[in-house]
Amino acid sequence: MTAVTEPAGGTRRDRFTISLYLLLAGVAILHSGLGALLPYMRHDLRMSHVVESVHLSAMAVGGLVASVLAGPVRRKLGRGRLLLCAGLLVAAGGVGFAVATTPTISVASAFLVGLGGSVCLISGQAALVGLHGPRSARMIIELNLAYSLGAALGTAALPLVAGSGLGWRGFGGLHAVLLCLVVVPLMLGTARSADPPAVPPRRAASGVRRGRPAFGVVAAALSVAVEWSFALWVATYLHDVVGLDRAQASWGTSLMLTGVIAGRAAGSRMVARVAPQHVLTGSLLTCGLAFGLLNASHSTTAVVGAAAVAGLGIANLYPAAVAMVIGGDPSRADTAMARCSLATSTSLMISPVLLGWLADSVGLARAFTVVPVFVVGALAAIRLAGGPRPAARSSMPSGRAGVG
Image 1 (tube, one colour):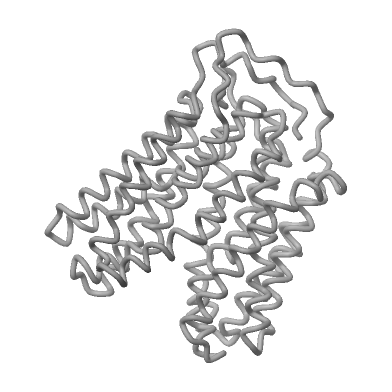
Image 2 (spheres, rainbow, N blue to C red):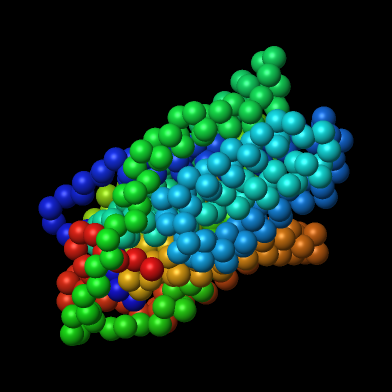
């Protein structure tokens, strides 16, 4: 699979790229912050835990729909308009949460957030390939770093907004205002840059192994399974298996999220010199190490440190997998990204439920051993996907490329 690597000469971030970063950071406030919002909604809307989980499923279904429709709609509207519409869909979801009086309205809002947020991720990452060519791997990880920073901002702001006179509903309303009055206008001024003139991609240089891109998608799906197994279950693992109290488990989770931000900041520089599949391999091995440390550690400090290692490991799983998949077919980045999103959204729906079912059946300690199984499967898929030989650096067009 052809690497998307950054050649010498540095990276120029134009106005559209910066606006795209801001759009993803703004979208992430609600797209990633839904889980933190649910406890507030459960109290006011009198929801059961099953109804809570339906909100997460609705958001995942929105991601599946986005992976199917993003390509055809992009061909009709253009990528710039599609990104603007996607941002407005997320804003509409925020308004829906602000006015929700029944779970039916809030579930529909979660679907809109999942649909719009996933379209932003799919089309945004594909746009970076079209605009930046061989430099796009670094941009993709930076885009996901912007998403992480937006998610962290939203998580920190939610208790403050909910504790004010605005209440938790004000969080969705303020988020919609932020997108509509600040982020979307920035995108509007640069939207035309999202659709550069088509330039036929150069043929791959001789000596480049074509690989099997389908296995790259499998690797991405299994990598997402590893990521969300840690992201959704590590706090419960620290409390139920290790025996930490809720405050200590929360601290461990915070350190894991800090590790994610630090890892993505480092990853954005690493892909300038290392092919994405190698970054992905190193991230998976780090996750395997984190699993071993969680099981072998006995002191609170060591276990919380293991959670931080897990954060470093999961940080670049998704962006590196995306860069690897798109790098395998850069001239059809939208199609490759849609397939990747379809696989990862399905994995996101299935893997946490699978781990939860196993935990109910055999206990969380034993159930968590599915994580190294996912790791080994992803590593095998990367190997089967193939990789570049040294001549591969010349196989991608420089500058603007025709995408999709």
